[in-house]
Every structure is written in structure tokens, then in C-alpha cells.
Length: 451
Image 1: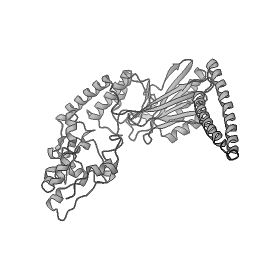
Image 2: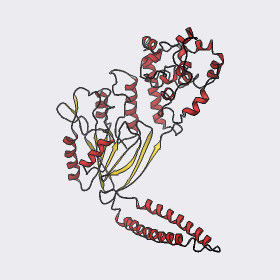
Image 3: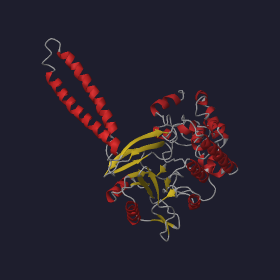
Image 4: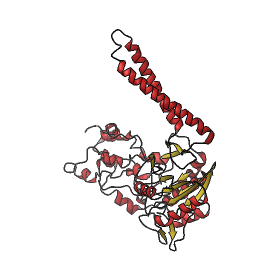
């Protein structure tokens, strides 16, 4: 079980002291510990919070590794590598940490060319033909450059924040892959170790593909041969039948050759390393892991307790500046209000209340009335959302049509946005929160009746 890093936080700078982000990070560490991960690379997002959480969890056995994260004296802050064994194959796992946007005091990122050659020499010198894995939070392009410089690396698992799932690809005899960030997919990679450290084809899979193609070829031949027996049709299909028979003969020879190779491999072992992979999409309808659910309930309780008595009214006033609230809209737009009242937007805040998530700053913004029509607007984790007035506790009219206070005072001169554009909707209906959002369909369903 491996994770390349950028595990704990979503932002590059987390304030010190008690916070929802800190509580969430502690719970993630607890869950990963329960799942018995073998190694987790330290990423720049993991450094966004306080170093004491990383150090304390590492001292208590959490499997952080980083080859290039050091203190001011160039002493490694975490284990630089771990080793495991699979059958007769020795596996060495190391990690490279990408530089964070803001470097915490007292630490530094050592150059790759300073640390990696020494480690690789240790790995390859201690055991014969080890399998070497690099966990990396560098960019995919930087990982490819590493492959060119250090051909002993057999597998790089990345955590490039700008990329989503990367299907395993062989580059310079190194396999490069990664899963999409922060829990959307689980990557399952099965490796069949060969007698050499060279990547090759899965001969069993290739044999199955060829046998399927041969079946299709035989079907085409039978069909054409049947047609050629009709009166006056023998010459029409003669050339095509000859070509297909030649293809069939060549394919049959290749199948026989592969069967022989597979038979030899069953006795002596495969010469090349082979791999099979799939990405498992982690969907909401998947069965819950009960120990994890229990830990998330505890996290939710801690977040409620943290925020319940820590509301920031002044911040809330700034967030709703220029907005009136749906009761004001109802005074002139009764038909539209009744339509909205039956929509899921109107009950958005209550869904949080039902799940005791009304104090969760990660959830709140998209369940309140926010001015997402402003092109400069971005959702930020702010306590101002905790003290939102009741009239704004839903996805109200102004979430789609923009602030309405001025319009309510001067309806003849101040107009409102008729329909929200795609960008406005995607503020909340992002892929992270809504896998099935289709703007063209949903905008028709949510459109209020005309005045």
C-alpha cells in the first residue's frame, strides 16, 4: 500500500493552531494507519500545516518517507527509504518531495542529484536486480527527466496536482503512473516479476487477444466462403479469401509461439516484468468501511465543537454585502419563489443539518447563498460562513442571479442576471462534488418560470 503524497491538506498554507484542516489531517493519518500503508511520500501540501504533526506521527510509526527533505544541517527529517520482499524479489521504495510554495522554517529540500545517486547505489549494490519504486510529488515532466538520468528506477508513482489518472506507461524501461488527487480513485497495480528488470508484454493477455482476433477472422472466412459458393460469385471473393487465409496462417503461428513461451515461463519464470492495472472509482454508493465511518463521525463532532462557539459575524457581513435574501425576493416574485421552494437548492442547508455538518467549513459555502456570479469569486475556508443569517441559509435566488439588494430598492433601473453561466454553476458543481453535472440539462430543470 503506497501513497505518493499531498495527502493531508488541499491548500498550500494552513494557519497554525486548532483548525478544521488540522483535525482533518489528524484523522487522515489515523485512517491510513488503520489501513496499514507501507509508505507515504511527504508532499508539499503535507508541509502546508505545522511540521510537528508530521514529526509526531512519524515518531509514532506513520510510514512517512522522503529522500530529500532535511533540516538546516542536511540531516534527513524522515526515513529516506523502506524495503519489502515479494517472493525472491527485493523491493526498495523511496520518495522525492517537491518544493512547497512556502518553505517551513528549519527545513530544506536537498537536490535530487545529491541524494538519489547515493540511494540507488545502495539499493543496487546490496541486492541483485532489486525492483526500485520512487514516490514523487514532482511534475510528470520532471519524473520523465529523472527516468532518463537514473535508469535503475523501475516504477514511479506520481502525485502531480495538475494531472488526473495516468495509465501506466513505459518510458525508458520505467513504468510511470498516478491516480487522481485525494481519494477519487484507488489504483490497483499488479506486477508479475520476471527474471530480468525489463518491462515486457503480458503474454497471457496477448494470447487471449490473438485468439479473439482469430475467432473473428474465422467468422469472416466462413461468411465469405458461403457467399462465394453462390452462382457467379466465386471470383468476386477469391482475392479477399486468399488474403484472410494468409492472415489466419500467420496468426496461428504466432499463437502457437506464444503458447510455447507461456509453457516455458510456467517452468522457468517470465523473463520480463509484466503488469496489470485498473483504476477503481470511489463512488458514494460503495459499501462503507465501518471503522473508517466511526473515525469520520468523531471528526465531525470535533469540527462542530471547534466552530460552534467561534463565529465571525464581521466576516459574515462582508460575504453577504449587497445581498438581500430570498424573503425579499419573494415579495415581488411569488411564482418564482414557489418554484424555488420545491427545489433541492432550497433545502441545501438542511441536508447539512440532517448530517450534523452545518459547522463544516468544507461543506458550508455550497449550501448557502453566495455570490458565485462574480467572476472574481473563489470559495475560501472562512469562519464567516458559520454566522450566516437564516435568510441566507440555502442556495437562494442570489446564488444564481447575483446580489439583489440594489435591485430590490430600484427594480426599474437595476436589472438582475437572467440565467447563471456554466462557470457560476461549476463553482459548486465541480467534478469533486458532482460527478454527473450536465449544465445544459440542469439549467433547464432549475430555471424559474418566466415573470
